[in-house]
Image (cartoon, rainbow, N blue to C red; front, side, top):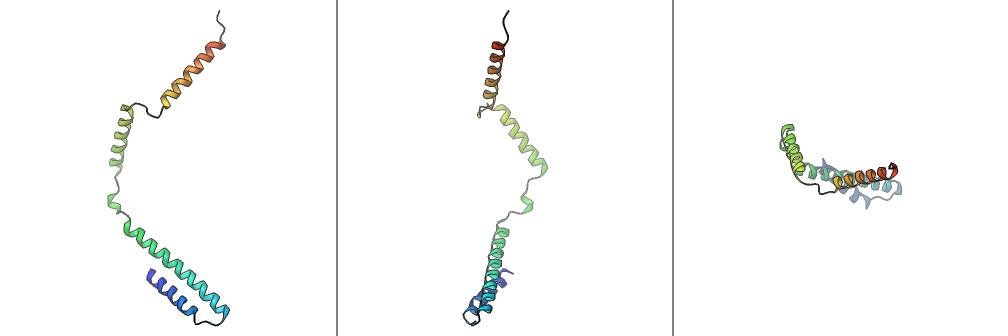
Length: 106
C-alpha cells in the first residue's frame, strides 16, 4: 500500500506542473501532502514491523518470576549502595536525640 501512496504523491507532483487553475493547484498540493504523508507513515510502519521481535521470544511468566527472584536475592545480599538505609538510620537517630532533649531529666 505504501508504494501506491508513493505513486500517488509522484503523480500529484508531476501533475502540479501541468495545472493552470489556482483552485486545482491547491487541491493537487493538498493531495501531494496527503499521499506523501501516508507513504512516509507506510514506510515507517514497514520498517518497524521488519525490526520487531517475534512474540515467540517473549519471556514466560515463570521466567519473569525466576528473574525477579534472582534480582531480589542479589539486592538482599548486596550492601545498600544508594544510602537509603543510612539516611533512614540517621533520621531515626536525630529524632531520638530530639526526643531526649525534650524530655526533662528528673
